[in-house]
Image 1 (cartoon, rainbow, N blue to C red):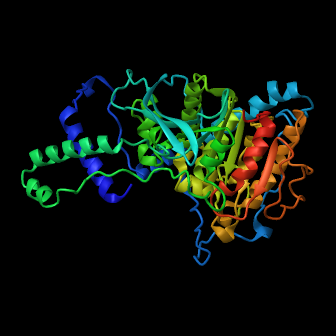
Image 2 (image 1 turned 45 degrees about the vertical axis):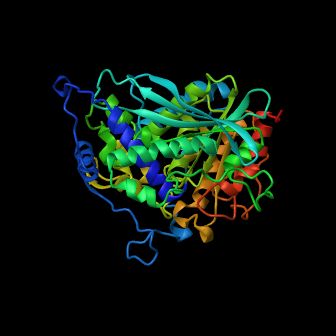
Length: 513
């Protein structure tokens, strides 16, 4: 849609909204006063709660800066020995699946929740899903049903904060039987909104002109001067006679062509991507507008919780195969997708794109993005306790990533034996060295031992993360339930979709009907 049409429609909606809007008054004196803090104030408050006097500053991504990040591999592993995912805290080895599920996995969940991502509170309110809009559309040449659905979180206990989860669900209508769906973190939008006929567009424009003239009579002279002008025009429609596009289709269209549906869920509608919003969103709602405790959930865990609530809705749709729903994300949303897959067992499969520190990359590694990057700038992604590992001076002394009781290979292992595809691009195309692809490969290699214990294949190498070499770019390591592929593109997982989809079909035993 061009700027002119966007402005016209927005102005039209503004006028309609101003006519129909109702003001709902809430007696705020009945509830705890909502705390408002800046990012820095919230960060400083958590430091004080934890007894931290000084944090080490995070490195600069600018390689010419005095405090640039380390990119020397010889300095990247100050504590190369990882915690063993298959050794219990009492020193006993995990030798069976039963020991994993009943003893070791709960140990890891406890440590990862307490020290890294935070715990889910026990009193999270329920979510009521409603379909806001249903639209029949075409994506390329594929007919689809697109639904915008809103998940309203019950805020009766604290009505000063409203949380409405925004999700778009798109299902191909030319496929028989329930279809798999890939849920993606991102900004929801209708892929190709159906449009009124030319006759209906004329009626809309006539009504719009009348309303504009009523609002500003001087506009009549302008419309009289240009009688054929239509303020609102139709968008270009699908041209079924046009040749197929050159190159790969967009990921969403690849999914639809393969008989999959997709859902896009908006993380910002669940929890803000900043520290100032930590007393708002779902975290603020549960805390009744108060700041977090050190082991409370951060934004990554909140986004994962929201995805699980979106899954609740998808499970009610007869056109969707509830046993074949996956989760996907890139960058910070790649971190969120991995956290989602690790903690929500109903997700059947995951595509984790370029997730970096806090995702698949080892916390212990000092290469590019560092623990200090997260304990400083993006502290709100994590539990407050995570900040301890960036402390240079504190009541407890000092800590680094080497002091963490867990690492990212164990987060990946929490997804086992469900299919988990780790995706990266290359620095030359924009998937920066900052993300530490090597550290993610090491974590993937180390996580493989758990996949093997649970009876499925990993990426097909030994689990010696210190000696296994990262394969060349565009090498397929897709024979197992744990998969690795570094494509030759940038900070995106789009180039890997044409490999992910057939791999996922094989893993989930799905064939388009």
